Image 1: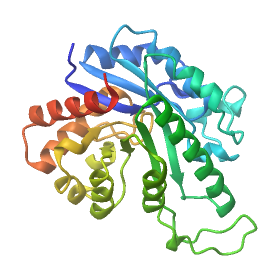
Image 2: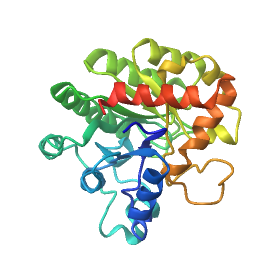
Image 3: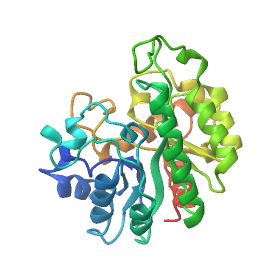
Length: 291
């Protein structure tokens, strides 16, 4: 079966979906939408694999260590649950053997989300992120699996761990990640939740990486120029559920079935028929993830 839509980056494996996880996935499948759930550490990666195997078709997993989770970070109840007793943001060291075991499952289609997150990090944390990123690239090379990248720029006024000022403005997470990829990666993949410039997007697509957009594009025009100037052959759609719910569902918990709103908006921005955009995105996802 060929779906009409695909959400290439969702987190229905997170705790916030514990009460109605199957209903959320079933709703997507009944609306001709396939789902790829993405791990953020070993616990959520295992959950993504477990979920993928509960459905005959249309649900897949990506496994990896989010750069935020390379250190003890803020606690997100949507991801980890209240109190974090089961899923903990403990500062995980990337365990290649644990992830290698998960990669044996045929429903695992990529490694990630991995990369660099400079948003609220100090330089010590960034070094840990880089080490984990390189380790995951090496594993992707070993299994010939694509990468699902998480890249986020710094916010102004960052500080080092001891509170001393640090000029994060001189550090560009997109360009730093690309430099690492060019040095280590023999595979390609997707830059999830792309929030960079047109020039940064071109740097990645020229290198063979796709870029995906979330529901953010439905309520801000900040990324219109990037979308207009990026070939449809290099674009994919995602929700990043449960976050960034698209219009007209703002205020509700996000879920994969809403990815159609992202596709619709991409079509509007590019002045193309929605059906053409939907078909192109499905073709792109099949090409990248071999599904």
